Length: 195
Image (cartoon, rainbow, N blue to C red; front, top):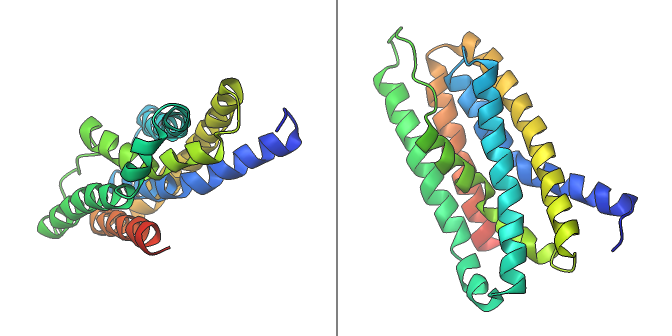
């Protein structure tokens, strides 16, 4: 494939498809922290974009170097995503239920939880390395950067929407956000294991 419209269009579509889990998690983060500042929102979206760009490149590198080892790891991807998102979502659910009537300011997503979310929502993008394996290094890198840009925009949208409704939902937002993360984990697992 050459540098043409189809390459750019396919890369953008790939970015949209891969960013849907990150969008949902961004929505949950916005719901959980309705007073989130724009700088933090950019940081969160940036972390998701970074992981969404990094994972296809790691997959591409695996295809060109250690493909036989990656094939056996690929079966674990849905299980890893399920475990990570169940942990974070379950923790949010427990905190939301414990503090249901509390009026205190909620603590937003920390760096550790954000990194776990980034890995959990982008780990399925490792397999995209297989779909872009016929690209040269520069084309694979450009494709990954386009995926990152699309992810950033979609995550910022999710954060804005979540932040807006988080203010309206007040104390129920943490419960809703946790439920969303648990649902995403189950969806990734079901899709990866059964389809």
